[in-house]
Length: 453
Image (tube, rainbow, N blue to C red):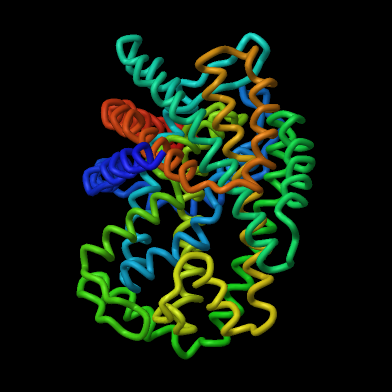
């Protein structure tokens, strides 16, 4: 087992190494520039489309555009927003937060392109399920000679979900409830088994309905709590803003329990944690967005940009600023413990439970979102006959994760997660002319309609 773990660790360092980070960031930069910064310029329009009232649509799809976004965000907003940001700052210094922002700004273009293609090339199964994602735009967009690449993505996605989207999340919930409220791991596992089962066995519509209600509430709850912590230290904000920007380009000196960081460390951990959090380029979120009831792929693609913006620019920033303004980033602790320490410093006796509740909600919704990704990968590989058995298997793994030691599972799923990105990014680059042509056609049509009014 030690040999297998060693080999897997070496593989993980390769697939999540500088080349992968360059490929993820480079693809985002390429798409952003070629789109003439369309995604950055259209953030207000994206929010307008999200809240736009729509008549009941007879377009293909299973979830409303809002619920499709919330289902994707259920899988995206997770432990990375609490523990991942803290790790980035611990390893790369305050400047890592700046590079997380940069990753998000170019990641919006990656997410936009993924969803545009996912809706464009989606399919309807014999029983009426709408399915889409990288495996489908690889097969239908690039042709059968590339279908093997779509199959690889589906295999990686199906099995990565059991770790990064399932057992790791249930284990995180069990750990935080045990350490904060002394709840036994097996009790958490049993409750999660019942609650997750009740949602997932109800199908995609129930997942979308739950995500549509829980995700906005948990996001607002965490943002409000973070703003309160930041508000208590408001005088520190200008200094912290300068620190984040200046130390993105200069080394951070060792201080207190902080060992110091080079500029490369700030870039590396900022980009890596940013991508881990918002998943732009990994190909997971388009699977949920492909189920939206929209006729025009541009509509859902524009809305999907908000997933990256909200996840990283807003939620991750809340964590980062809470850690920095309270000064605990030099304490020498990392991960969720560092975030908890920041909240406790501002709200003694209250901060730890607040973080525990947020972490629990974030991890719970991640379990739901990743089930959608996993089951659609299985449908692609084996057809709809495997849909319900796969959901049952997925639910059964949840309590096991709550009581198990998962170091190897985490390492394996993290490696598979990176492997998902490779075929997806190759497909995005090869299909980028289609993306640019669709954007051009959209604006040409809008201009023609404007002239006819």
